[in-house]
Length: 186
Image (cartoon, rainbow, N blue to C red; front, side, top):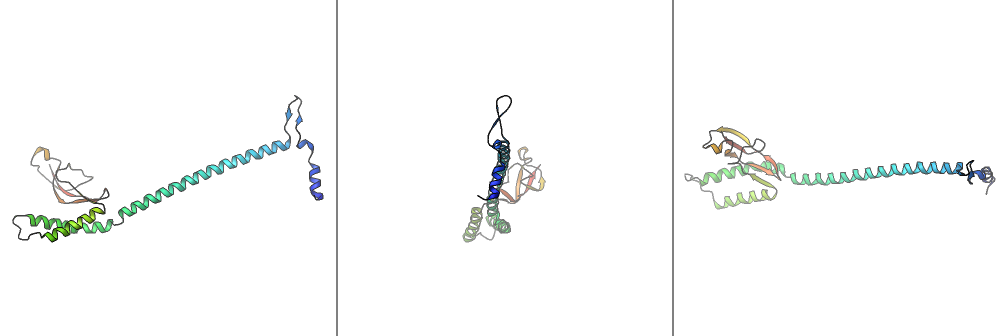
């Protein structure tokens, strides 16, 4: 032990370590005990703050991970959306050619090979999440349909309903990527 350390220990009185009786006969805390208790309280508060900060940071990170996974899944679902939208006019042309060939007055038959190509293309897009929207006969809803024109309805029950579909609408994973263009009865 060095001289300096010896002097420091000599300066500490026994009063700091031994409880002293007060006038009422109870034990009075020493200055050292009070100082240690104050430090303990401060450290307890610091620990509680650090724990709270840790829990908040952990929750934030967990939310970040969940959000990132959700964004990644959404991106994967809509990754081919532009390509599919660009292929929709090809599907429209196929449908018009098919309707035209089914007409009794048509001179051009729709060959079985072309019909298979159409079916194959439509099934590939369907596997990727594309769904054709059925509109004819449904109640007109401006959120789902784009009205081209209104015509007099043939019966009372057809008023406010879609009489004909000019252009088929499509959904990609339950999200409308093209609204159907329809004629509404009034």
